Image: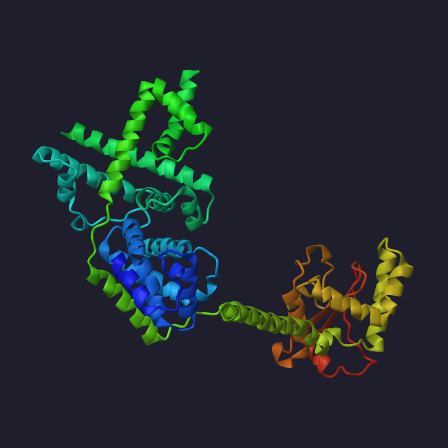
Length: 217
Length: 270
């Protein structure tokens, strides 16, 4: 996919300097934004191509299902286009884009009254494949591991929105603490605190549920 | 000492496991974990939980059609609805149009309300209760005030001076009307056979604006009272202790306009 995108950039935008063509380069996005502001739909499509996977990923992890993730991603790009002139050259375009993504996800969650109760669709997961990939061949082990994964997803669903956003960006998307702080518009120390609290909650939630199930059996 | 250290390290373990600690805190946590079996166990649990989270929320593979569908939808909306990027200047002024509209509406309402409330006290200028007294009425007021002054411990010179100044007196009336310091009109039943009111000043009802307006209207509109009824006009002078009360029967008032035969049945001052 990345190779395909790179091909598009190389063939369709000869006037963009080669250094700026690299995905993620600030100048590259600045040029595309300028063009999109001037009404160049192709430039906007390139922005989407370069960023959509990450946006869908964040939206899916925040909202928990494929349909919501798709709707949220569409809303994100419509909002980005609408407020494109607000983006100032020199700023981190992707940080701005992910901030919009998180805000849209909050709005979606609020609208659907899912602030604390998102539902990961189990059909989105192929846990058995995952378990097999990680080496669990025994059916009993496979069942246990599948159950654990479902528990962890439920633990993530149970987190408050801000903590969930911090955990998703830091632990699942692999952003640094400083990047997460920029995206969420808070301080690194706050992000560290939120992430730490979220990790502890996930761990406690899983332990508690496993203990309950153990007691019930 | 070790317990305290464990408590402190416990809060840092999740950060240590994910590599969020740097410098001295990281070294401190590492040194503690090397010594403390319980904290090491906790660190392993955190590590396992983190790994499970990463596995559990591994993104499902969305196909190319999924992304293409999103792009189509977005670009279709942009071109169909003509969503132009908003300029900051446009947004700054046009985006707040509701604030401006609400402010304008509030100003208009305030202006209307001000006009209405300013109009209310001006209307009574036609009210007979505030019309200039005739010379006989002034005389009657003066005589009654002098009579009252002999009964009350008030200084007579002050009382006379107050009642003798008719412009000031009526200015006082207006101010009193605004301050709602009028008595309510008395019913005809309260009057004795001579048409005078009993001296029951102690039992006077609490003053109210409506009573003032009522007494004024009572005099001004002939249809408001039957022929046997008696109108009562009370005028509060600038001195809060002086009040002029004037009772007039309806028949008398019809033929009244002459100054020589005033009909103040009773002049009363408090």
